[in-house]
Image 1 (tube, helix red, strand yellow):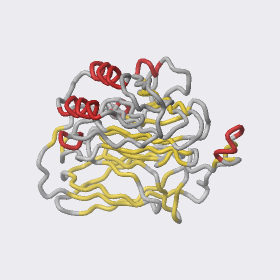
Image 2: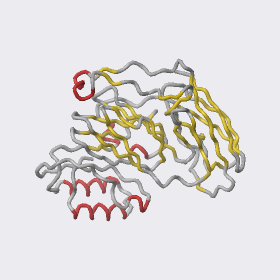
Image 3: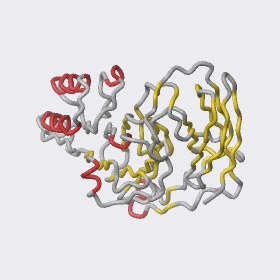
Image 4: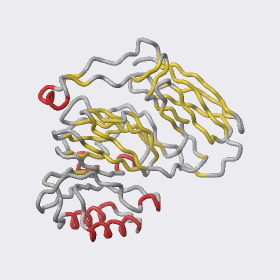
Length: 324
């Protein structure tokens, strides 16, 4: 979906999340926000968001028709493409490995009384260290001569940036109300590097680099990217829910540069966590029972371990990851 302005150029502004999206807790469809829309455009967008439109294609057509009549859009715009369009785009292909599998059944929200808490520490051997920096080539003036590898973030033996989750848990507490993430192109890198989210979330992408980036959102075992975003030279925000339509580990890569990388771990339940730099994590409100705990890190093998959660109690576990 592309939204283009055809009026005179204006200073670039960072757009804010659509008003009213927090009220109905609905994901925001793929949308480009470039510059400040007119007052009538804001009211029109608000009414459509609150009406809970179920047709993404219909909304895309409405937004496009409104935005093309704007009078203060910037001279350069970004483009958010649908999965079908993204699948035809040149760029990286999805990996074969499926890290977060499709659930066996629908997740059911129920009251959790005397829920337990699972805490622990994820560690790795000292041999797991960052890789060599990546040369920036022709973009060295904006990015420096090289980008350091940020795949390994640790304190002592603890390992940060690992995704920890209860595999295929099908009953439990409600999903979190906060479903808006932010992914920023900062100093030519994507930050944060690893985030967790639930289905129906949306991500704002902010660009601060003086060159084009073509970001692809790729999930293992799928035929093409879930979404593709073309970012121009100016700072822009693109709220899109396309990467979060179903569970999966989504990798964000740039078709034009080898170093930008980020990960979005998408679940249909709330029982997951991202480890702190010291490797610690906490998952609370867990119904008592036996589960399989899984751990993924981009530089290690996936590990799974049986755990037991007792009513109203805290269970502690420690897992050591091995490098791939």
